[in-house]
Image 1 (cartoon, one colour):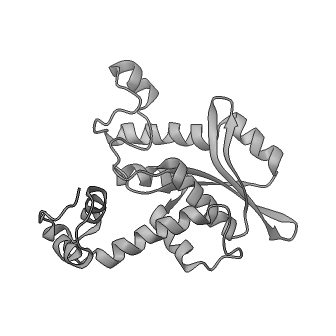
Image 2 (cartoon, helix red, strand yellow):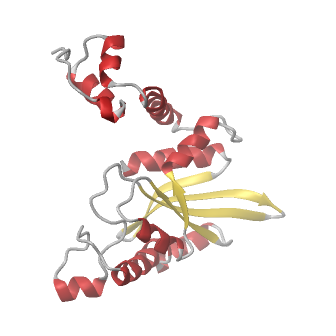
Length: 220
């Protein structure tokens, strides 16, 4: 999911006229996306994106604070409920690692000496409090759904870029979700006729929840 989301974000940026680099290795770490665009008066708009998108998040975006890991033996990505203090410390460590690492800063300054933004793209999250704490660290938060809506309007400088095929497929799924959001699964079956297991599972996921029921019309 993360790599697909990165491609969608990159397409969104390209259509706005940004030149992008994705998946940049910095030692043992990685920068998801860097984007630059001339902004006038000899200046550049420089943006650093991290993408953390999940459909069904089990754990948090950030890791368990290092000291808590040492003192309790909890795994870095433990899904156990965290206190406000643990979330606060964990988000600070995460922002430091993702956006402020020495190697990353040095690389970005070699690419462009202007100030770089700190931006995070999310989808469904386990903790809204965690997101607000990340925002409080000076990170701009974007929702993947808003980016998809922007792509659907297609008002950018560039009409399409290398990720347009994937974006079109995603848009088809979004269109289906909107079209069938208030329709029961039974009504979809009446309209489409016998469905394969794969088709049934797809429409079961987007049909009106209260009306979901199997009618025995699934074809083999």
